Length: 55
Image (cartoon, rainbow, N blue to C red):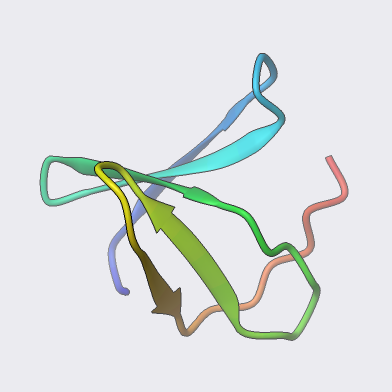
C-alpha cells in the first residue's frame, strides 16, 4: 500500500501504519518476505512491501 506513514510504538513493540484515517499493526516482520497487517477493527490484509524490523 503506497504512501503509508509509519511509527514505532515502544509500548507495544509494533510498527504502526497510518492510512486513510485507519491504523494497522504489522504482525509478520520478516526481511524480504510478504508482510501482513492486522487492521484496526479486525481482519488482515497483505502489504506488498519488505521490512527489516530490527529495532
